Image (cartoon, rainbow, N blue to C red):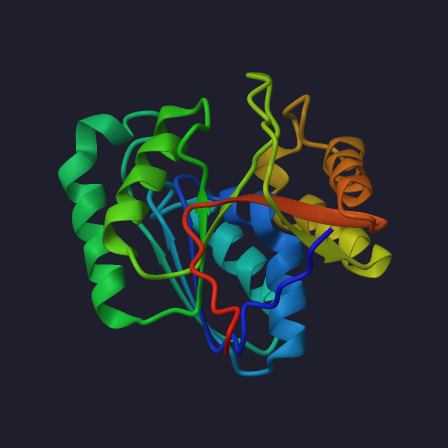
Length: 215
């Protein structure tokens, strides 16, 4: 297992197609980064769920997942499951996000995610953030689309447990879903931990990585 640092992380971009995507896919990573870098700027963009209960859930959750951060959250009102039909609106939102920040790290859905909203947003991110470290998070669901990730962020047991607690606490609208439970979230984190010689971890695909081995 090769361990590489991403350097100083002062600005983070995190995007999700739906409220709770970011927290499910990268909540532990956000907790880890924000605690290590007090005052880190986090720009979060969510394409759907704006104007109602889901937006408030998301704002409260991201505040908890980004302790001490300079957090800026935008939640749009694109209809769930219709992202391809609203491509121009999504593209404009991603481009506006790109214009206002120069991130050290980008957290995004995977381009091969089975959900069309996740997949579409991921493709937009590859064109807007061309020269950045983009880590594509995974979301467990009934589609069975989990792949073979290439990057891992180990999580301490305390962070892994806190991630699960915060997911349960801040998204009551999702508790009825059969896959939305402690066993699913902690179980996947344990499997990814095994793969990187840690107790728990979050796993990502890497869009593109430039090395500086002589630096």
